[in-house]
Amino acid sequence: MAEMHKEKILLESGTNEIEIMEFTIGGNLYGINVAKVREIMISAPVKPMPHAHPAVEGIFKPRDTVLTVVDLPKYLNGVESEKGPKDIFIITNFNKMFIAFRVHSVVRISRISWTDIQKPDKTVSGGADGVATGIAQCGEDLVSILDFERIVAEIAPETSIQIEEIDSLGPRSRNDRPIWVAEDSVLLSKMIESSLKKAGYVNLQMYSNGRELWEALSALPAVEDLSSRVALIITDIEMPQMDGHRLTKLVKDSARFQKIPLIIFSSLISDEMRIKGRELGADEQLTKPEIGHLVDVMDHLLVKADQAAQAAK
Image 1 (tube, rainbow, N blue to C red):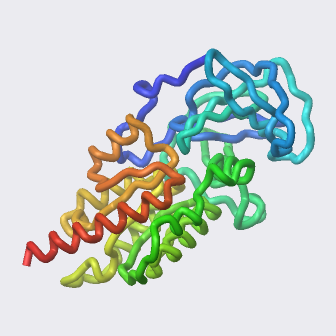
Image 2: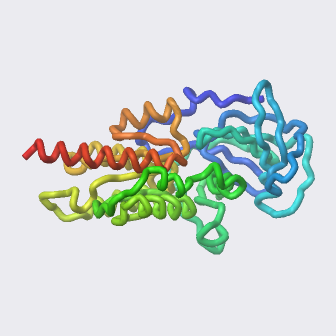
């Protein structure tokens, strides 16, 4: 058993770097952000669960915690594969959940720049809703970075963003303030967009990574009231080309943009990540899939920004 000690692997804030754990399934190389990994261990006997998703192998109990095991080879290939004694369980922690994923082997950890990760072609990724969120150049190898949030959302939809949460907020008015969102997962981007529009935020600009948003922000013409162009930014952390921490650093280090309220909305929010985001100047940091909480925080930050603008006049 190998535990991932976070104090050793956390990268310096805002450097636009990522550490990828490379693993194999059927001889193919895949990757996962080390920040999502709690530990790796040799596979153990699994107790099947009736009426579970076909890719859910069952449960097992390392130490005192019961974990769900996802058969990743079966999920990716759609067919049952032989389970070897040397298979590995990658224990993940994101969206406030611990889940074990069966893989065939773990190869190494590579530190690369997000600029070395490209959005996969739709013919390779399986279309707009493909499970590969990026293709990384790790040394001489091309590694498919899997969208683990999408995998879990498909297996257990109740653990992902619930648009119905907006109903619990009560009647809401239309809000035309321009909101910019950076989110690379096609599935989650659609969910966020639908949820925010249902909450009344109809003026949305959606970007597939931090670099696209930053370039659009930098290209804005000089105007007296910048909030009429972008009133608030919401960003994921994990994204090809430029991650959310780098985007946050660029925005908050800019005299022109630093007053724009910025929310980090990510499955990776932990105590350590929260420290990083705070150091970079994020106004708020929220854990997916709490979409109702996100709307509450957006409301608060926009009112606060308006009050600050009035006081400055």
